[in-house]
Length: 339
Image (cartoon, rainbow, N blue to C red):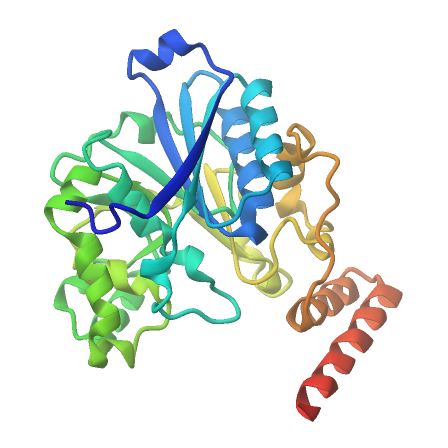
């Protein structure tokens, strides 16, 4: 039985594909979990996968708690444009409301658990991608990969020493074998269900000892549940770049061999203060070849956005823009202190 059996309350399917090919069960399932702020990124990510993999039949799944007519129309258009299948799943969040969130991470971070449950007995594997992941190469290797008795394949987060650090923090010995980043996961739904990984992940949030030490909520919980028993993928399948550190950490900026570029951190490639970097060109190219091409990049929406916008514009010698956003950041900061 699925832990989140009743989580999907409605769905809409768009199929611009050759239906005969899909009836043969030849499609490769890719799933995203996104709230309303990440649907833009999701759409462009889908376009990037299609642009770089014209030889694969896909079925994309978007799990979201928010969907308006305009969003649905854009996903319908990309389905027709690339002759692919897209299903939009609207979620009931009742079971997630008690889980921890913050100003950075909404309940959408837990949608990947719903996704792992949803595909139980539906397919042998599903590729989960964060909405801030852009495809820049062929994923045929992942489509052909056999997971056997492994519940998930992923990429190590940072390095081996970090895995040991996290294992000691949680007092979970198995994590010393590897702590992975949950932004790109090739999931074996049946094995995931057999091992009750969703239940084990959820139990982390009722464990007082673990609650006091977890940092990355869903990612920590999944790693604790998996306990180091996962298949390691090459780093090219989750090449992480933090745009807020891009002018400090230049050694990580080479994305020439990456298959998936994962834009971690608070500045995303759909933010207008990030467009000056070569690394976001993969996002901008996919955007231009998608129904989102006429949608403007997002302007700063809150105090944190203004803070980073000011820094990025200053670095790129856009001094007037930098000063403007610094003033707005300062005003919002003063306003917050007066409350």
